[in-house]
Image (tube, rainbow, N blue to C red):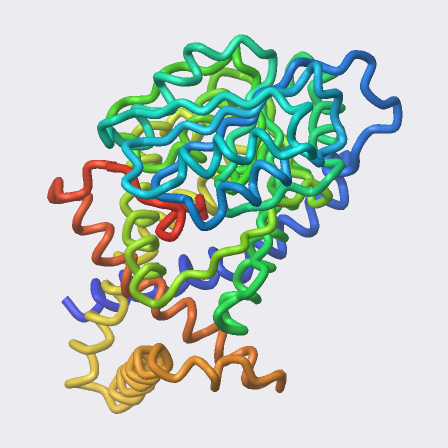
Length: 398
């Protein structure tokens, strides 16, 4: 029995090290050998496609006017661009403020449609209903609280010169990260996406801004949790390509408090399990680099909370027989305790020393995985059904 436990423990540790350290190194190495698809091609846009920016909104009164002004200022022909604000049973002044914004002189050239749904039916229902009625060639999904970089549309549409290209993903940036750990984690995620894009297609995109071909969209199942994974990766599974561009930026204006962040991460964890089960075809060798990324990144990330729990449990059992495992268990327990305590003392996590940044990153990951463990169990026992969450609780595919 002890030998079996040691073998399982070793497998867990190898998986943890591979996912967090070895895989990023492999990505960096392989991406240098492949054509760098994250650099915008030089030939420019031969023909600018029609483009609709769709903003699903649930109680976004705080940001909706700023969002409309932002879209109106983007560098793209107004005759080719449309903005749709889809209000999903809003109980605040989102729709009213959006209508008022359409009369502002700086927004007058923008084709804006405001759709009000009286009943809150969920984001997936909104996407299925509204996208079905869009007749533009390209659709961009964007959050109300995320400002789009001025040249983003032109940069994105260059890629669609390639008929095999289905999805263009933008880069997600936080205006006000809540901790150094959160900031460093997102920098880590950006590097992962860049590497994935260089060797195949990015595995999932940031939901704050991404573009896709309208004619490739297929309605999502009603219980879909993360549209920003299922929409692009369904297209990749069908044989098309996706690309990630660091110069196409969505700047997130709204920060989230601890409670909001933890709810969001529970949903992400549930979505990761759902994605693994529904798009397992991405694991096949015909997807080459994307398959490697899906196995090493998304698949391992989906089960990582369970792996971490398994190794902690085994270490706890073995600690009764070995002082070495006792100290390993004690060390891990201290890290978990300090990570939870750090949630109520965020100022410590914003210090600038190198050691503090490293500790902050470890605490951020630890807290994330603790919450993700609950999200994983919620999905496995059927509690998470994929209902709408407002932007303050948005899910970003990780």
